[in-house]
Amino acid sequence: MQFTKMQGAGNDYIYVNGFAEQVSRPALLAAKISDRHFGVGADGLIILQPSETGDFKMKMYNADGSEGAMCGNGIRCAVRYAVKYGIVKKNPAVVETASGLRRVFWKGEKLWVDMGTPFFEKGKKPDISGIPGAYASMRVSMGNPHFVIFVKDMETVKLGQDGARLEYAPEFPDRANIEFVQMLDEGHMKLRVWERGSGETLACGTGTCAAAAAAQRLQYGKSHIFVCNPGGVLEVKKEEDTLWLSGPAGFVFEGVWTGTDGGYESCQKTADVKGRCVSTESPCL
Image (cartoon, rainbow, N blue to C red; front, side, top):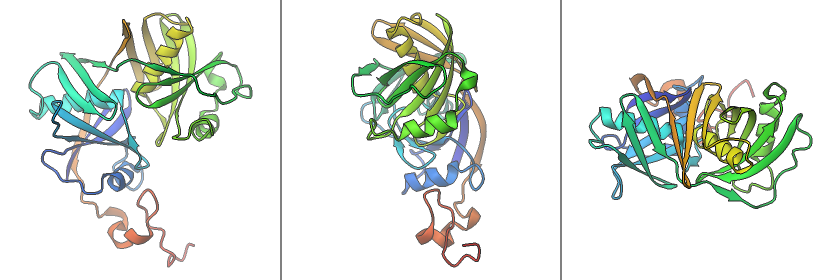
């Protein structure tokens, strides 16, 4: 199977041309190929497929094999891929996602994604009083669930501890993406994200938009915000009720996945969620 690895501000995915390749078990493939030790290594898998309503359909899977609804960094890379390989021939591109149709404009290397209208959920929120420096929080949906927490100092954030815990908080029956935000001024913020199904990532497009939307809603930020993710800077503009996202989208490398590395095929019945062999015959167990 031919694949291409791409990244948007360090948020990396494996891309497969579903017009030419057949993927029978995409969830299992996502878990295998995303593994950074036993696979190619990525935050997930994105398959471009034919669509009746758009130029193509973007099917997104997280690193644990769970299916995602939308990815702001992933869709920019998907459109760059689609333009390069002739799947998209007009500007803007219209992409079908699980969160609805999304328009993507580009000029040169810069792409702008119509991320839709944020929805501010009014459900119960987890307690943040035990998080050092946390002073405000908000539930936001960008077609997928986010919990945005504002902190005084990003250096105090224990993302692996609090992000992992809050992802599975009882207030989020379908789990949630967790964002920690430090406002630098009205037009700039720092962001770290614990993504549902993938853990910490270097950037998150929907998380960036959720953080910007929460800041705008709470009157901490302006309608045009630069968001400093660990992997790079993303840009969010609010036009009426719509958020537009822009940032880098680059090719990393191409390759061929055989699906046989690491003994996967010989231990399918006893493989764990990432496809690794956990046979009870192992002398290490």
